[in-house]
Length: 267
Image (cartoon, rainbow, N blue to C red; front, side, top):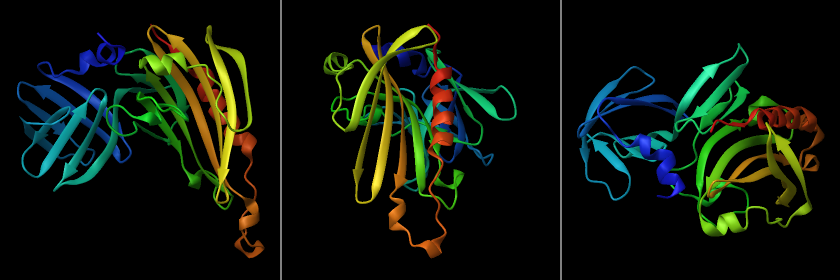
């Protein structure tokens, strides 16, 4: 049995199994029952949706509201328009007024992140977005988004923190392979007792700079990655009358490195 199947086997819909999905637009709850799902949306609406045929994953629909799930991912549509996207299954608890802890649905890992930042998945099912520069498919296990609005009136365009994994044999083979990129470098580090290879590299184009720090380790029969990318614009693109200031990169880096440092395998 492949690692993805083992990770998400508990998400197959047994009787009365309630799963929480964190989407870009809010939190949805799905209670799986025999041949149907009870869906609770953030606005309080509830729907009992019968299971219908799906080309991939599991699909429930009443003809207007549709709920799709595959592995730990899910999304909801209304009249064929996505209203809750990039859902990821898991548990969130709050340490204090500023910090939350995410635990994935398989209780494989956890990490801390600032409350108020967006928690979600990225797409549904397998994707090459599971790590920067990947050509093999994997899974995005969690995504935290820091919006541009976090540092207004600066050239900061946002940042993403991703936990991903792939059990594709090619991904495992290339897990520690150095990527091309400006200033690319690598070193060995330890996070919560586990050795990772840390990669640092950047890419630029059309006035945009993408700076990525990627921590990778092999565990079981998979390559895991904990990484973040900071997106900014060339400050020279803005005229003085716009009042745009150079963002304080150290503030964002320190925030993201704290998230990396909190990452822990639970089994």
